[in-house]
Amino acid sequence: MSYVLWALLAMACYSFAVPFMKLAMQDLPAFTVMPIAVVTLAAGATTVAAFFGEWSLPAVTSRPVACALVAGVCLVGAVVGYFRALSTGPVSVVVPIFGMFLVGGALLGIVVLGESITARKILGMAFGSVAIVLIAS
Image (cartoon, one colour):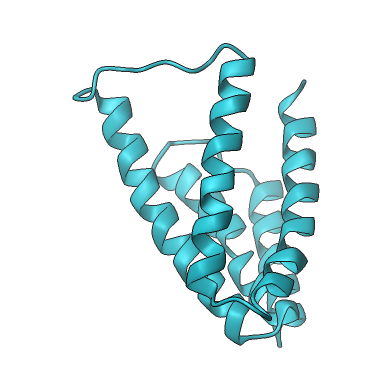
């Protein structure tokens, strides 16, 4: 499956996840819903990795493991903030603000990873930023 199809699958699943998170937090605290969702994510991700034959136990001291751990710490901050924001604010405002990670991630891809920058990408990030501001305000 191409990366575009994977991205579309991710977008669709994440779109459905948001209202279910908000519904769960109507009766449960955000910090109860979050671990349930994260444990489900960990079990599901491990199952998918095993299914595709991509599950391995790398050397703990390797650079990729260090990068994965740092990514995990960043994800903790993202998920904690996102769940807390969803539990206290409207989905129609929280999701677009959170969605700015798309622009941030694209910029970091260019600056940190040295990915190519084009007028089309700059225009896309600008339009994305404007759209998010319009939706969230």
